[in-house]
Image (cartoon, rainbow, N blue to C red; front, top):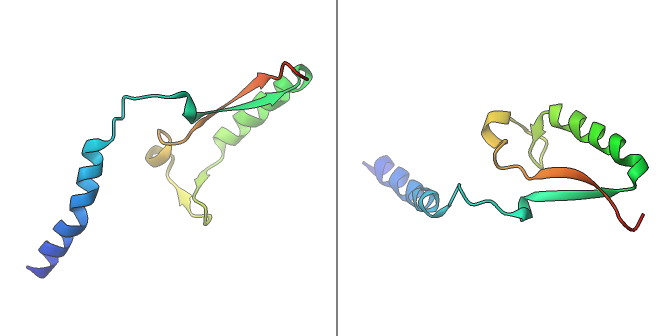
Amino acid sequence: MYRLVLIAALATPIAGLALTVDDTATSDVDVFEIRVASDDLSDCRETLAMLEQRPVVSDDGTWLPRFFVSEDLPESVCVVDASA
C-alpha cells in the first residue's frame, strides 16, 4: 500500500504538467538562426545536415533515443547575415 501511495504522489505533478502543456503551440523561440556570410551558407547547411545524423546526448553524455526527444529539440537554420 505504501508503494502505491508513493507512486501516486510522484506521478500527480507529472500528470498535472502534461495537462497544462500545449503541444500545438509553436513559437519562433524554438528556432536558432545561425548568421553567416553568403559564401559560407552552403558549408553551414552541410554542417547542420551532418549534425542531424549524430545521436542526441544529454548534458552528461548519456545517449537519448531520437524518437524520445526529436520533437523537443529546437530547430537550427542557416541564414545570410545582411551586415557581412
